[in-house]
Image 1 (spheres, rainbow, N blue to C red):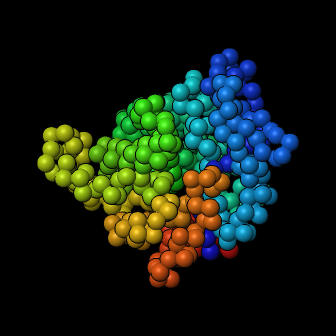
Image 2: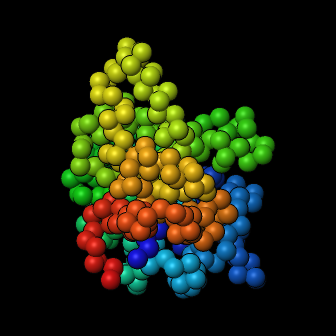
Length: 335
């Protein structure tokens, strides 16, 4: 059994939101004769995607080739659109979430779904979160590492996390809107340097802001092996101990105590780093995540784990058991 908790999907067709709402910044899709499509933003090429970004059949073929039994589907982070009018973001969220729900409902033993919500408006976000869980049957939501520059420790977001806990919804935190990206565009540094920093920013914000302390049953997973956080936990803990006047103002619990209280995916591309994560966080809080279908992801999902010298029990935990725990599903759900 293999579950991939970190995969991205789009609808095959997107409406012309610039025309509908009267301003730019939205993503559109231009399909090409060769079966690919160009993602366009403000009239400029943003990214080319293959048909496996929207075609469930193509995804299932890839899953067959790589031995993945179930993909957890979430939108591409550029679609979060937190910058827009909240009502317009909500409208887009509904389109994306309806498409994911349809894909899941067509293949409920091969796909699970995470919705997206307009995090910049607390009430609308909770409304769409409730719809995702109660009406669409999704497993949870994916959110960004910051919301228009606001950290996840902000009081604006606590009611959303509280609602997710009450709804038994899983949360997947993915880096986006990378801090400092305008100063390091060359060499793909926003993806290589900025994303790991963003993920650490999100984890630290939720720890120092007391989110995990106040909501111990909240199930949160972070992308890209937790980013820079695991490798810098010593520095983070030392800062907490040496300057509690700066770090412990909202939560006086040692940040190291939260290791093992949240999940991370396995996307580190390095077996030594994966072993380091297991040593720091434990083998019950790391779940296979590939970032399918993008080039910075693991080309054959699960291969790093499968080809390692980890024992069979640890491999099972990483390949599917931990994902089931995060999704709050029984071992036989997808069998």
